[in-house]
Structure formats: C-alpha cells, structure tokens
Image 1: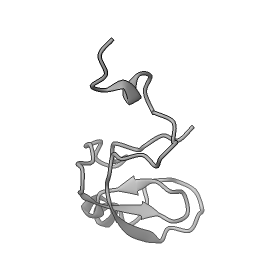
Image 2: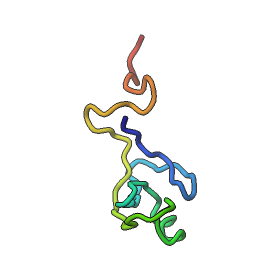
Image 3: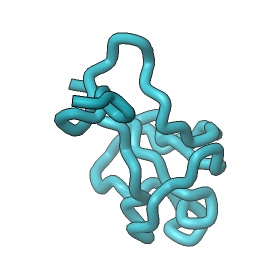
Image 4: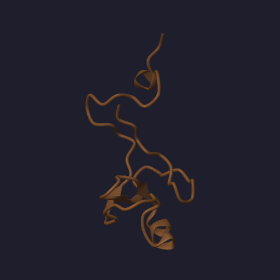
Amino acid sequence: TVQQQRFCPLCDRAFNEGEAVLRCEGCGVMQHPGCWVRNDGCATAGEHRKTPTAHAHTTMRPMGAAAPHPGEDRVGECR
C-alpha cells in the first residue's frame, strides 16, 4: 500500500502542495528544508545514508496507486 507522507516528522506541520521538501535517500522520509538544517540532517534515527534530495511536495498519486484513506478516490462522486 502506497502511503503519501503529509507531515514533517521534525515540526509536525503539514506539507503544502508544491512546497519544497527534502527526501532522505536512505530512508525516504521527507522533511522541510529548514527542519533538516536545524536538525543537522535526517529525523530518522539509526545508521543509514542521510543524503537529501530536493522535491516539490505533491498530493497527486501515481496512476493505479492505492488511496491512503477509504473513499478518497470517490471525491466529488454522488451516491
């Protein structure tokens, strides 16, 4: 199941559509760039490759990816 990360683990603020985020190459967790800098790296504990890659946050899922919440694919659909 594909889950879209929506919150920064360091500040617990939601990511906004199109907002700059850093994704750790080692664990895949996204963080705000400022949070990454203040924390001196990735929020995930343990040894892993902690190299950041820059991305723009998006709530769009790849075609065919599972919805993270029941009924989400039915937004705007009348019953």
